[in-house]
Length: 285
Image 1 (cartoon, rainbow, N blue to C red):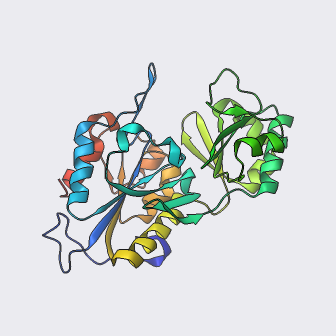
Image 2 (cartoon, rainbow, N blue to C red):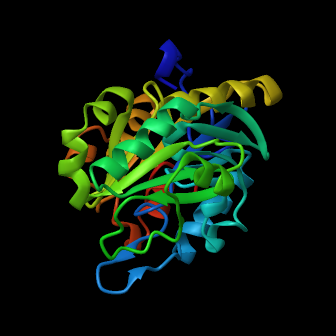
């Protein structure tokens, strides 16, 4: 991985044809618009293509490790991905990293910042989602959008929904971007990622998918020995730090132009088996 000054030795793809000892490679797969997609008319299909699912299974059968890389919470993983051999995940854009169900690293939003974020949302009439391992809560104006989260008006309310107050990210929709720009608190206390054209996510400064992925690489190496190549698959702005850090950056054909600028490979669209085609191109399938 390129992060942290780490550089892997030359590796041939395809398992038995790799040079030297047979190292395991490690791949991080974004979920939304990389493995599953949203139809503008019908909404989220929450289904990965069978060809891409088969390719991920084959990748792991060769002795490699697959992990999920997402802004979602652990409990938000779509059912269609739960029977695939993912060893772990980085979620909330890197605020939480899990390997085999155990926490590797966690960087939750401090309680004082949660209280201030709640006050800012109510003051600016801005809709803010609070997302953590225990669930989701929502403060402010929904503007007709269903967040599938319980409404809260105070820290007491928030604690009733999220008892530990472990919150990995805040999120808001495009129609509240102006309110976000009006808030010096949000702009100075958080890193903002545009994870979709109409969706923004806020995490603690220094949190990113690249940092969490590096933690996972180190944890896996401590457990199982050296990692060969690191691959990252993604489509949006919150994927860019990890795409830059990985040895191979696979960007979906449906990705934003900004994300494509950091690609090693631009593959096909998500609904045209882009993940599978990239793994085949790299010799894993």
